[in-house]
Image (cartoon, rainbow, N blue to C red):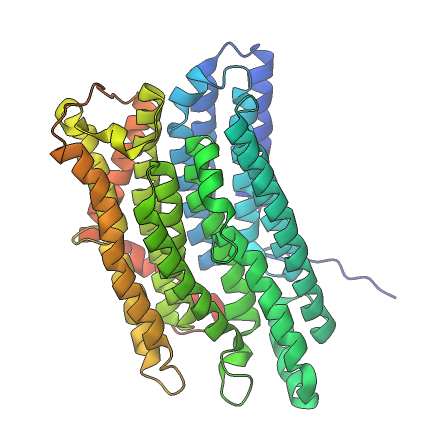
Length: 501
């Protein structure tokens, strides 16, 4: 029997390979210098991420390891997001590593890079097992990072909760993947789609097994996205984890989950969208989960007094908005999802950078501690206000366009036969968007309309200042001139067989 080896191209995998080696370099450098080069480790990490971005720019499209690893427009788009989130998270961490992480800076930044490698690997994965491996490579370093303050009970508790729930969700997801493999006899996404259609026409009783597989996969990936009822870890982990890690979780882990969801459901299970098959088996279930995320995230966030917990529930709601574009199951919907996570990265990472700087200075994450901050730190308050308004979807910021595009995609699909149920999802999104204004505006009110002056004058170190400026540029420039990103995002649906919008 002749064994045919897959086509291997190290050039296509160069960004991942380089970043993996650079993570080892960062850890080794910190050890060799006897932990004495504090800021140098952070700058070395940022340089490595920037170089990886440059390598990605010249890598191009094509197979890296047969069909299991393939660079396509979607993979490149999401890799940019992963690298951007990692760069901004590292830039926000300098104050933290100077005060609280003195002896393990190399491990801290190295684990962040290793998680980024997992995300990038996942973005190019084109097969069930490699998708699962990519998710695990992403998540395992984050377990450690969430509990990095080993002497802090809250941090250890958050890491333990994240680990337990994460391990359980991974087991459930693998079980769902095994069902798909049992039904189709393959782990290749394209072949799985074709085999499912054949099996469905031959054996009419596969519906129960398929729905069970879909339910388990939504549960497994729903954990990564923080979707209800798999969201319980989000507020606790965001509160207990180091703040830059919480920021990285809110973007990197969420984007990785979105990539996995799109590959498995929109690509591998797209044959089950039609009326002649099993109409919207996963679409309606995902729509219900999206509505739950919108209602729970936006209502519970109102009651929060800790800004990290508030942003945690906000991220649950944001995942619900993103899923509106996903369940549209169209080229416009996928482009809207890509643009949304891109715009969300700038606003959320910028907001977390301000929260990190404030926490480093005051030791507090309570919203009431921001009272009167506009009087002592006016520029920081202006930046935070812009980020929060973008998260709320106020024009002319990028967050407004992001929400507009996902709603437009869902409404367009709802006008087609069999898609009327999407009006309910859009309606839930529009109503709960009004709720979100309250808790975002509450922070702004504390900063600008408190009678008391803040006792704190919060400044930003150079790396954190760079992160905030990048965030401001993103929400302002791409809110006013989104065409370059929209053109790039318009190429994402091509890998799913959709015609670009």
